[in-house]
Length: 289
Image 1 (tube, one colour):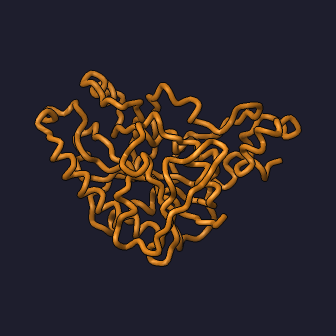
Image 2: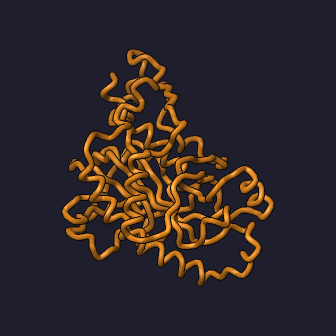
Protein backbone atom coordinates (compact mmCIF):
# COMPACT_ATOMS: atom_id res chain seq x y z
CA UNK A 1 0.00 0.00 0.00
CA UNK A 2 1.20 3.50 -0.85
CA UNK A 3 2.55 5.67 1.97
CA UNK A 4 1.22 9.19 2.53
CA UNK A 5 2.38 11.22 5.54
CA UNK A 6 -0.39 13.81 5.95
CA UNK A 7 -4.03 12.99 6.64
CA UNK A 8 -7.00 15.35 6.94
CA UNK A 9 -10.32 14.49 8.57
CA UNK A 10 -13.32 16.72 8.03
CA UNK A 11 -16.40 17.46 5.98
CA UNK A 12 -16.75 16.73 2.29
CA UNK A 13 -16.31 20.40 1.42
CA UNK A 14 -12.66 20.26 2.40
CA UNK A 15 -11.52 17.99 -0.41
CA UNK A 16 -13.59 19.81 -3.02
CA UNK A 17 -11.14 22.70 -3.03
CA UNK A 18 -10.01 23.79 -6.50
CA UNK A 19 -6.35 23.63 -5.41
CA UNK A 20 -6.49 19.82 -4.99
CA UNK A 21 -5.25 18.04 -8.12
CA UNK A 22 -4.62 14.47 -9.31
CA UNK A 23 -7.56 13.32 -7.21
CA UNK A 24 -8.39 9.64 -6.81
CA UNK A 25 -10.22 7.42 -4.33
CA UNK A 26 -8.67 4.67 -2.24
CA UNK A 27 -10.62 2.07 -0.26
CA UNK A 28 -8.86 0.83 2.86
CA UNK A 29 -9.93 -2.27 4.75
CA UNK A 30 -9.04 -2.60 8.44
CA UNK A 31 -9.40 -5.22 11.21
CA UNK A 32 -11.95 -2.82 12.72
CA UNK A 33 -14.17 -2.70 9.65
CA UNK A 34 -14.53 -0.06 6.98
CA UNK A 35 -13.75 3.63 7.57
CA UNK A 36 -16.42 6.29 7.20
CA UNK A 37 -15.82 6.43 3.44
CA UNK A 38 -13.19 5.97 0.78
CA UNK A 39 -10.12 8.17 1.18
CA UNK A 40 -9.74 11.04 -1.27
CA UNK A 41 -6.09 11.19 -2.28
CA UNK A 42 -4.77 14.25 -4.04
CA UNK A 43 -1.95 16.78 -4.24
CA UNK A 44 -1.78 20.27 -2.74
CA UNK A 45 1.19 22.20 -4.16
CA UNK A 46 2.87 18.90 -4.98
CA UNK A 47 2.30 17.40 -1.51
CA UNK A 48 0.23 14.22 -1.43
CA UNK A 49 -2.51 14.20 1.20
CA UNK A 50 -5.29 11.81 2.22
CA UNK A 51 -8.73 13.26 3.04
CA UNK A 52 -11.35 11.29 4.95
CA UNK A 53 -14.97 12.53 5.06
CA UNK A 54 -15.67 12.04 8.77
CA UNK A 55 -19.41 11.42 8.49
CA UNK A 56 -19.25 9.85 5.02
CA UNK A 57 -20.14 11.71 1.87
CA UNK A 58 -23.60 13.14 2.24
CA UNK A 59 -23.17 13.26 6.04
CA UNK A 60 -24.77 9.86 6.70
CA UNK A 61 -23.24 8.88 10.05
CA UNK A 62 -24.16 10.20 13.50
CA UNK A 63 -21.22 11.09 15.77
CA UNK A 64 -21.92 7.98 17.87
CA UNK A 65 -22.00 5.83 14.72
CA UNK A 66 -18.57 6.90 13.51
CA UNK A 67 -16.08 4.03 13.06
CA UNK A 68 -13.32 5.89 14.90
CA UNK A 69 -10.99 2.89 15.18
CA UNK A 70 -11.32 2.00 11.51
CA UNK A 71 -10.73 5.63 10.50
CA UNK A 72 -7.50 6.02 12.46
CA UNK A 73 -6.22 2.51 11.77
CA UNK A 74 -6.74 3.11 8.04
CA UNK A 75 -4.67 6.29 8.40
CA UNK A 76 -1.93 4.19 10.01
CA UNK A 77 -2.05 1.68 7.15
CA UNK A 78 -1.64 4.53 4.67
CA UNK A 79 1.51 5.64 6.49
CA UNK A 80 0.01 8.83 7.91
CA UNK A 81 2.28 10.55 10.45
CA UNK A 82 0.27 13.75 10.90
CA UNK A 83 -3.50 14.26 11.16
CA UNK A 84 -5.11 17.66 10.77
CA UNK A 85 -8.69 17.38 12.00
CA UNK A 86 -11.22 20.01 10.99
CA UNK A 87 -14.44 20.24 12.96
CA UNK A 88 -17.39 22.61 13.33
CA UNK A 89 -17.99 23.67 16.95
CA UNK A 90 -20.27 25.80 19.06
CA UNK A 91 -18.75 28.60 21.13
CA UNK A 92 -19.08 28.53 24.91
CA UNK A 93 -17.35 31.88 25.43
CA UNK A 94 -18.28 35.25 23.96
CA UNK A 95 -14.74 35.88 22.74
CA UNK A 96 -15.03 33.03 20.22
CA UNK A 97 -17.33 34.47 17.56
CA UNK A 98 -18.86 32.73 14.54
CA UNK A 99 -16.29 32.32 11.70
CA UNK A 100 -13.41 32.46 14.22
CA UNK A 101 -10.96 29.55 14.39
CA UNK A 102 -9.78 27.85 17.59
CA UNK A 103 -6.85 25.47 17.96
CA UNK A 104 -7.64 23.67 21.25
CA UNK A 105 -4.93 22.09 23.35
CA UNK A 106 -7.21 20.11 25.69
CA UNK A 107 -10.25 17.85 25.46
CA UNK A 108 -12.94 16.96 27.99
CA UNK A 109 -14.98 13.80 27.51
CA UNK A 110 -18.75 13.90 27.99
CA UNK A 111 -19.54 10.93 25.73
CA UNK A 112 -21.24 7.83 27.14
CA UNK A 113 -21.55 5.19 24.42
CA UNK A 114 -18.09 5.11 22.82
CA UNK A 115 -15.91 3.01 25.13
CA UNK A 116 -15.31 0.38 22.44
CA UNK A 117 -14.38 3.03 19.89
CA UNK A 118 -12.03 4.92 22.23
CA UNK A 119 -9.05 2.51 22.28
CA UNK A 120 -7.34 -0.09 20.15
CA UNK A 121 -6.31 -2.05 23.23
CA UNK A 122 -8.14 -4.91 24.87
CA UNK A 123 -8.73 -8.57 24.00
CA UNK A 124 -5.63 -9.68 25.88
CA UNK A 125 -3.31 -6.71 25.29
CA UNK A 126 -3.48 -3.91 27.86
CA UNK A 127 -2.18 -0.44 27.08
CA UNK A 128 -2.42 2.85 29.00
CA UNK A 129 -1.20 5.69 26.81
CA UNK A 130 -0.08 9.03 28.24
CA UNK A 131 -2.66 11.63 27.27
CA UNK A 132 -2.14 14.64 29.53
CA UNK A 133 -1.33 16.75 26.47
CA UNK A 134 -3.63 15.36 23.77
CA UNK A 135 -2.67 17.71 20.95
CA UNK A 136 0.59 18.01 19.05
CA UNK A 137 1.96 21.49 19.82
CA UNK A 138 4.06 21.44 16.67
CA UNK A 139 0.97 20.96 14.50
CA UNK A 140 -0.81 23.59 16.58
CA UNK A 141 1.97 26.06 15.78
CA UNK A 142 1.64 25.25 12.09
CA UNK A 143 -2.15 25.69 12.07
CA UNK A 144 -1.83 29.00 13.93
CA UNK A 145 0.75 30.28 11.44
CA UNK A 146 -1.47 29.20 8.54
CA UNK A 147 -4.49 30.97 10.04
CA UNK A 148 -2.41 34.13 10.33
CA UNK A 149 -1.26 33.73 6.73
CA UNK A 150 -4.85 33.45 5.50
CA UNK A 151 -5.93 36.36 7.69
CA UNK A 152 -8.64 34.75 9.82
CA UNK A 153 -9.21 35.37 13.51
CA UNK A 154 -7.56 32.52 15.38
CA UNK A 155 -7.43 31.63 19.07
CA UNK A 156 -4.71 29.33 20.39
CA UNK A 157 -5.38 26.96 23.29
CA UNK A 158 -8.56 26.15 25.14
CA UNK A 159 -10.69 23.09 25.85
CA UNK A 160 -12.94 21.27 23.41
CA UNK A 161 -15.70 19.45 25.32
CA UNK A 162 -16.87 16.40 23.40
CA UNK A 163 -20.54 15.58 23.96
CA UNK A 164 -22.46 12.49 22.89
CA UNK A 165 -25.09 14.07 20.68
CA UNK A 166 -26.82 13.95 18.33
CA UNK A 167 -29.03 16.51 20.11
CA UNK A 168 -27.35 19.74 21.11
CA UNK A 169 -27.03 20.81 24.75
CA UNK A 170 -29.80 22.01 26.99
CA UNK A 171 -29.34 25.56 28.23
CA UNK A 172 -28.59 24.19 31.73
CA UNK A 173 -25.83 21.95 30.35
CA UNK A 174 -24.40 24.77 28.27
CA UNK A 175 -24.18 27.06 31.30
CA UNK A 176 -22.53 24.33 33.41
CA UNK A 177 -19.90 23.79 30.70
CA UNK A 178 -19.20 27.52 30.77
CA UNK A 179 -18.81 27.42 34.55
CA UNK A 180 -16.35 24.56 34.13
CA UNK A 181 -14.25 26.78 31.88
CA UNK A 182 -14.88 24.91 28.62
CA UNK A 183 -14.29 26.89 25.43
CA UNK A 184 -15.98 25.13 22.52
CA UNK A 185 -18.28 22.13 22.15
CA UNK A 186 -18.37 19.41 19.51
CA UNK A 187 -19.19 15.73 19.11
CA UNK A 188 -16.25 13.99 17.42
CA UNK A 189 -12.66 14.93 18.13
CA UNK A 190 -11.91 13.34 21.50
CA UNK A 191 -11.94 9.75 20.21
CA UNK A 192 -9.88 10.72 17.18
CA UNK A 193 -7.23 12.29 19.39
CA UNK A 194 -7.04 9.28 21.73
CA UNK A 195 -6.73 6.76 18.91
CA UNK A 196 -4.21 8.88 17.04
CA UNK A 197 -1.98 8.89 20.12
CA UNK A 198 -2.25 5.09 20.44
CA UNK A 199 -1.41 4.82 16.73
CA UNK A 200 1.62 7.11 17.29
CA UNK A 201 0.27 9.74 14.90
CA UNK A 202 0.59 13.47 15.67
CA UNK A 203 -2.85 15.08 15.87
CA UNK A 204 -4.28 18.59 16.04
CA UNK A 205 -7.73 20.13 15.66
CA UNK A 206 -8.78 23.19 13.71
CA UNK A 207 -12.14 24.07 15.28
CA UNK A 208 -14.43 26.19 13.11
CA UNK A 209 -16.84 28.26 15.19
CA UNK A 210 -20.25 28.27 13.49
CA UNK A 211 -22.43 29.67 16.29
CA UNK A 212 -22.72 30.41 19.97
CA UNK A 213 -24.09 27.51 21.98
CA UNK A 214 -27.56 27.91 23.52
CA UNK A 215 -26.26 29.76 26.61
CA UNK A 216 -25.98 32.90 24.51
CA UNK A 217 -28.77 35.42 25.05
CA UNK A 218 -29.26 35.99 21.33
CA UNK A 219 -29.06 32.31 20.41
CA UNK A 220 -32.78 31.92 19.77
CA UNK A 221 -32.56 34.43 16.93
CA UNK A 222 -29.94 32.33 15.13
CA UNK A 223 -31.42 30.78 11.98
CA UNK A 224 -30.37 27.70 10.03
CA UNK A 225 -29.55 29.99 7.11
CA UNK A 226 -27.15 32.00 9.29
CA UNK A 227 -25.37 28.87 10.52
CA UNK A 228 -25.04 27.56 6.95
CA UNK A 229 -23.65 30.93 5.84
CA UNK A 230 -21.05 30.85 8.62
CA UNK A 231 -20.25 27.21 7.88
CA UNK A 232 -19.69 27.88 4.17
CA UNK A 233 -17.43 30.82 4.95
CA UNK A 234 -15.51 28.68 7.43
CA UNK A 235 -15.09 25.85 4.93
CA UNK A 236 -13.42 28.09 2.34
CA UNK A 237 -11.16 29.59 4.99
CA UNK A 238 -10.33 26.08 6.20
CA UNK A 239 -9.41 25.02 2.67
CA UNK A 240 -6.92 27.88 2.39
CA UNK A 241 -5.54 27.20 5.88
CA UNK A 242 -5.05 23.52 5.12
CA UNK A 243 -3.31 24.28 1.83
CA UNK A 244 -0.79 26.43 3.68
CA UNK A 245 -0.51 24.03 6.64
CA UNK A 246 0.17 21.01 4.42
CA UNK A 247 3.09 22.84 2.85
CA UNK A 248 4.47 23.70 6.28
CA UNK A 249 4.10 20.14 7.60
CA UNK A 250 5.78 18.70 4.51
CA UNK A 251 8.75 21.07 4.85
CA UNK A 252 9.23 20.82 8.61
CA UNK A 253 12.39 19.33 10.05
CA UNK A 254 12.50 16.42 12.47
CA UNK A 255 10.27 13.39 12.87
CA UNK A 256 6.77 13.05 14.29
CA UNK A 257 7.28 13.54 18.04
CA UNK A 258 4.76 10.81 18.88
CA UNK A 259 6.37 8.07 16.80
CA UNK A 260 7.18 6.12 20.00
CA UNK A 261 4.14 7.16 22.07
CA UNK A 262 3.21 3.63 23.16
CA UNK A 263 6.74 2.32 23.69
CA UNK A 264 6.19 2.23 27.47
CA UNK A 265 2.40 2.11 27.41
CA UNK A 266 1.87 -1.61 26.79
CA UNK A 267 1.56 -3.42 30.12
CA UNK A 268 1.10 -6.95 28.77
CA UNK A 269 4.35 -8.81 28.06
CA UNK A 270 4.78 -9.62 24.35
CA UNK A 271 5.00 -13.37 25.03
CA UNK A 272 1.47 -13.18 26.46
CA UNK A 273 -0.09 -11.36 23.51
CA UNK A 274 -2.88 -13.43 21.92
CA UNK A 275 -1.89 -14.05 18.32
CA UNK A 276 -5.26 -12.99 16.97
CA UNK A 277 -5.12 -9.68 18.84
CA UNK A 278 -1.53 -9.10 17.78
CA UNK A 279 -2.44 -9.56 14.12
CA UNK A 280 -5.31 -7.12 14.58
CA UNK A 281 -2.97 -4.46 16.02
CA UNK A 282 0.19 -5.31 14.11
CA UNK A 283 0.36 -2.00 12.24
CA UNK A 284 0.56 -0.24 15.61
CA UNK A 285 2.37 -2.62 17.98
CA UNK A 286 4.32 -4.83 15.57
CA UNK A 287 7.61 -3.04 16.17
CA UNK A 288 7.37 -3.70 19.93
CA UNK A 289 7.17 -7.48 19.77
